[in-house]
Amino acid sequence: MASFVIEAPGEAMPLQHTTIAQTLHSAASSNQQQLQSATKQLQRWETEPGYYVHLLRVFLERNQYPVEVRYLAIIQIKNGIDKYWRKTAAK
Image (cartoon, rainbow, N blue to C red):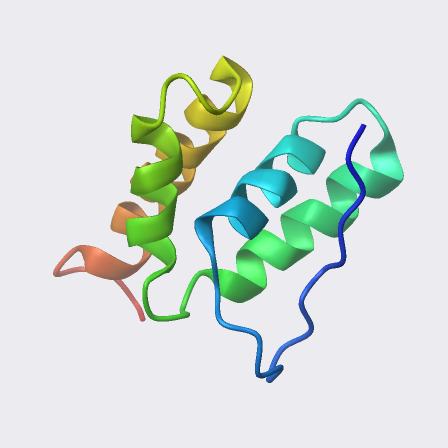
C-alpha cells in the first residue's frame, strides 16, 4: 500500500491528480483512520482551483487507477456539482 503526505491548506505544493488519486485510494480503504483523514482532505480541496479537472482526469485514466478510485472521483464530481455549481447552491 502506498503511503502519502496529506497536503496542508496553504502549502505551496500545487494540487496534482496523482495526489488526489492517492487520497481517493485512502478514502476507499477499510482502515477508519485513513478513510477519515482522506475524506477531510478531499473536503478541503473542494474549493481549490483545478480540483474537479483533476478528479475528471483520474476518472478518465482507466488503465492507471483501480475502478473504486475512479468511481470515487466521479462521485466527488457529482457531489461538487450539487454543492457548488447549481443555481440554488448555497456557496
